[in-house]
Length: 264
Image (cartoon, rainbow, N blue to C red):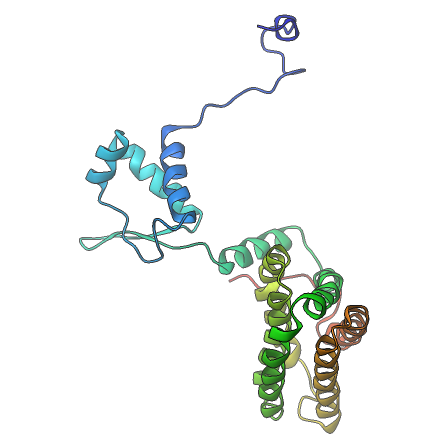
């Protein structure tokens, strides 16, 4: 033992952190979790019977059941009760993050303005990445998407959903998976509040609203033009301006100080 540890009085945590030995159930859950992440267990697969797991891991029935409860709490398995019950694998997906993000943001009483500010910070650099790294692939996809948006101009609820999808698609096409994951974590909250904004608009069918919508979709087309030109600087600057302008309209409808509150 080193001199540094000899000098530590019994029970002191000043220079060392107490080590907690994982419970057996946690170790079993970790092995199953790793198998899910590696793809050895696929979405919808049935977890082997308790008797098989008991034999494979050489542990007790209560330990296996606790391990399954851990995985169920993480959203990695779903358990059906009854004679035909059992545990089925649920592969990790974005809904897990959306729910977790919603719980955290709501518990911290985060304002909607704060949520939109985050989007304004991350989307313009994503537009730059699309222009500089993925122009050839992105342009035809985005142009077809804008055509779909235009076809829904008279249906304000449908086009609102489609516009939200455009933002999601832009993040996905950036090619940065970590950035896309963070964006997806906010997706449910953002889309829910966009829908809320639409329901609160008294002028939803007015000529002014249609003018705003046409202006916004024209801005989408302008972004795609810049992506096609592979002009990262201009794409980022344009999308920052777009996000700020759209934010002023959107936040005026839902109230920037309103709290994130979309949980069931």
